Image: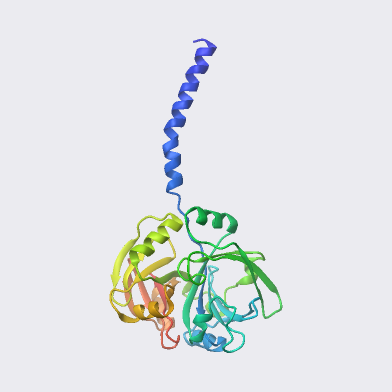
Length: 311
């Protein structure tokens, strides 16, 4: 075979291979998914002392974490071994909440109010969400001064509608080392709970919420089941969110009417479910999507639904 004929032959082979690969490349781009890395979940209230005491009463003593740079709110947290944390937010001065994104929640003793996911590529994530047709704000700087005087900083972008982290999670990227922002709390070091595993998100329309999350993150169809206390649930395997829509009336309908679509419960990962149940005196054990779920005393938590999930 001459050199010219040989080159022509290889060009034909190469062109054929490219044409065969194009559909695969396009398909892989179309089905690309985003895995969410849960950063923290928030509980808002009118008094930080009250919030701290309620968590302490169930065996999760929070650490003081200092005032935010907005000059309006302060916080405490329960940091877990896996790096996630429960954040408690309250006004610096009683009743003065103007200027906080979560002002409407802080007129209550305690209420689940927001969730956040971490990223190291915030600008890229903002651009990706925009291309997916999801409302997202430009990154904005946030800060907090710890009780020891150290200042920490981060950038956040609010995703979707409503208050930050009400339905879709807001995204956060540290500007100072993340270890400055959170460390495992002494009250849960080596405990049978190792972190925040799931956010249970109250929604008005389950199908619409499923479609929103699939559009935002490219996920496949979720698993769906009914739970008497929560209504109809949808779970995206491997992701940190469980959607909950009320079947008819009840506490979830009342919550949605008062606060809109927001987190309504948080589930901690139980590395040892039996030990966690005993240590924290959990009750109401049910099976959700093949895993056991049990609950802390909601009365002690001022109505907040906090549970554990595990085998």
